[in-house]
Length: 240
Image (cartoon, rainbow, N blue to C red; front, side):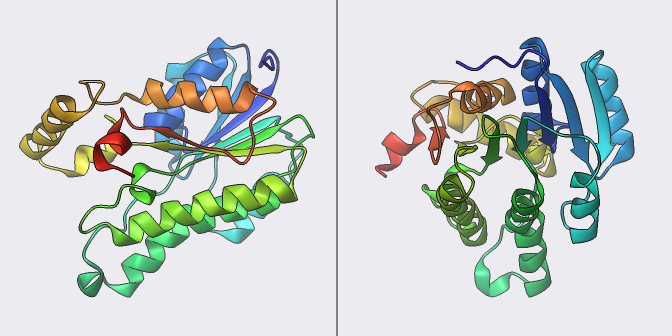
């Protein structure tokens, strides 16, 4: 297992949820951590929580010039994690094209821009976060399924193109993150309760569960081109 002591780790989307949990674990493993997102206020709050060894930088992954400028700085990273993007839910005939393009731009193209701009060392890694809808589709989430599946396909291609730098994707199920704050409290509780009742783990996933898998992808030097499911056994229940 590769050590993260004094390694420089960048977590895009690191101001909350899975990204923030990843930053916490990387710091505990001895890394120097930079978190990035578009919202300066949220970044500052997250950096304050993380404490010594962490800093925050503004990055808009939907803006090509912003991404290029970000990665042309003197800062170099050993490991980069991307956990960002939201939206795209809705039945396709009813989903406005501007919302569809925005969802694709925020996640798939954002990840794509980072992959083409970042320069990683041969023993470094690039880790994407997708989601279980890529392999366990549900009604009203066709576009999200397609976005996540595209990310996983890109993972395998990049593992070939960027070798020996490693490229992997972590594919989480329903995780207790601010993503679900968009639901009314009663609906969110009902979703969480249903997951806890039906999943093989008998509990809903936490950001730390996914962060542990991300650190495994960072530190396992024989792991590349891999899509790792972290979904509490949901795939076995769905039969994929």
